[in-house]
Length: 250
Length: 286
Image (cartoon, rainbow over all chains, first blue to last red; front, side, top):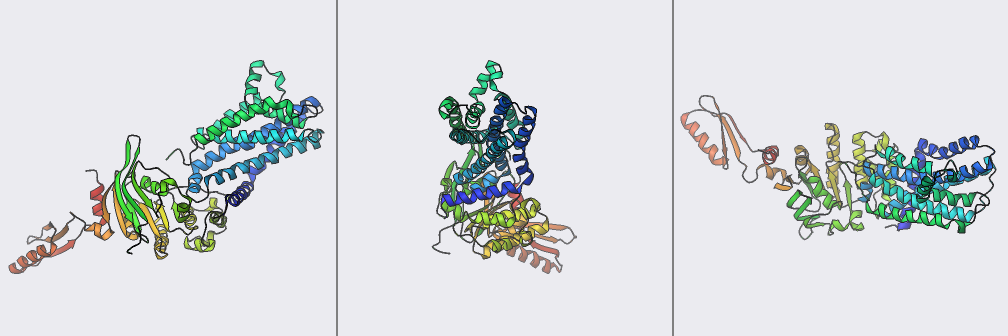
């Protein structure tokens, strides 16, 4: 039989092909961060400080939507449709299959971060990321944590019909309190405390360090990195524990 | 075939979900190359039994052997040698039939040729159609094709024709018969009697987690306790029905008496209970 590595590569390529085949979904997936950038860029045009908030904020939101939101939806859909169960009956190792799904989401996150960085430079004159190491470290840890948390959330979603409501009831409040659209400095203390305990604000904090001139190197964002790391651990435990290969109903 | 071990051996199999006993101690074995039918009403325990054999569920008690493996350990080699058609399972809607088969073929050590399987499943005209554009019956044939792509020795078919129109059912039966010609072993569940009678070499009738009768469809029709039914019109033209274990003797007596009286036995018939009669009798709640 083929090695796990060769199988993973094939599974990954298949997932990518299927992702692009569903054109409307793929289109809006990449259009959404650009729309947000264009809207908020127009609103705050010329205000350097505001742009320094919006661009890393939308990069952070893109990480969350491509991994957390997408995996929570996809895993629920594949489970409820019986695709997971069908795959489980084949000799494809389960871990290879799940890694293929995760790598597909990671690729979308990487593409979106790329789009945001390029758009920030081309349209808003932000320059290339001053701290690429900080950007990469936070992107990698953030993507990992949100992918695991998305998988964990899918276990709590009983049916595909209820997935949008449940996922959005997490996604929307988190992006609102985490400073995607404004500087967290300006929100009341208790909300800021909540935001800083959640994984998105620390991720945006680190991405700001990577993307915006003079916001500090990796060393000055270690607390934020630790918070995301803790969420990743919570994500691993919950993602593995509740995993079900079969539909909840019928 | 002497000396060849059975494909499936099940001994004293039990499965409980909490306080509910879904399977209550069943035994059967399926020989290699045989088509074996598990026949019973909905909720009888057919799917639970099959899913234990497929490795999806853990048994509560008993012994199970599938191609020499314990399916509860889910060995990869076993998964490479069986094909599974579940009652319902989704698939990547935007992939074509040929793409899906090519992708699944990568999972197996010695897959069959894609176009061979497409032909076997009767999907030649749908080869380059995306799964979302297939009809229900075509989707079911795709399920079968995906189960056959790894060239399995043993194929599990869980209610393969439920929801089919009569023509589609006959087509599916033809495909399943062709599996026999390929030397495959098939475990089939169904709640259709005619399907079991058409396809299965042997049938086990299962209800409430127990096997009520087992044998070839013909044997079951005349199984233990089932009697021949002799009907005729007596001298005043009334239809008389007599049940007997020994129709030869009864017919001899009836015909001799009639001849001695110089009468004819009108509307004489001898029937044995069909599989349907046995099934209805065994599975009725009365």
